[in-house]
Length: 421
Image (cartoon, rainbow, N blue to C red; front, side):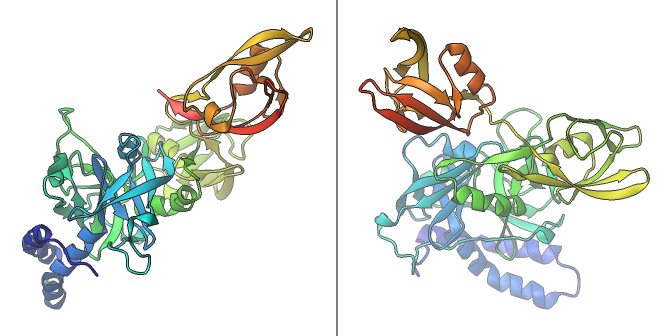
């Protein structure tokens, strides 16, 4: 197992501060545990640093022996085509994107095996996901990151520590988050937040500041390990595409009551009924209207996805399997073609008159001059037909395109719709 560079070793000396913090947080009478924490902290910190990765302008963490690296989506989209992962000490690997979640702000990368590492003895450690019952307020936490790019100078990540300020919460678009006070700043994004057992509590992604400046104010938000565990299989199997979130079902509207509860105000085509009181959604307690809406969006979406809900109806409690809506991806749906109506053989036809370079249409094999026949099984012969067929299509969807090329060759291709600002 490779040793930690001397710069990192020097930083490990500071870990005695962490040991002191842990001992202060332990209850009186636990002298044996306190002594173990003090003696084991350097080993712990070394292990955490070896699981850390510099990713783009931010951070990441290894999740497996075979090179899975998790980071934030907002870190990934700023990386361009240079997908590289760098270890503490400077060793660099190329990577590929397996799947990304723009709503939940997660991206899964995989280090390519061609860079001279062996799965039997990888040059990194990998993090174990913490269970839901580990997300306890006042738990000591350790953040590893690259604040303000300081680690770019010497390939040494920064370690900070604090406590978990909350259990699982909903904060805006982070539908399953924890809040901590370990100092995190720009450059920590995508990096790990560990507990003192070295388990991954979450991925640091946001900070809060009253001034609006991107500086730490003692409030950092991390995407939780339970959400990571739920989305990880989908990210791993996404084949370089986008993973989606559930949402409040269409036709359902919620409202806050005067008693501090959340009720169903409207329910069309759902097992929910007006005046149902929502108690739990996705096994988590409903505390407010924004929380209820966020909890409906906290699960991976796929066709047939459901969101379990515990409601109070007419004095009784019922558990319902609610058919989930789908959270729209940010940006507009983008396919990369334009089409014009023409007369071919006396009949009106819809012909592609432009294909953007490196667009979803170009990558699928469509070309200028192709005549569109159908989109997702709907015949198209005019721009109106095309607009109607594409109306329900969102970013991340796949459109099956049937067309005929200039040479008469039939094409049946799948275009994965991208997101574009």
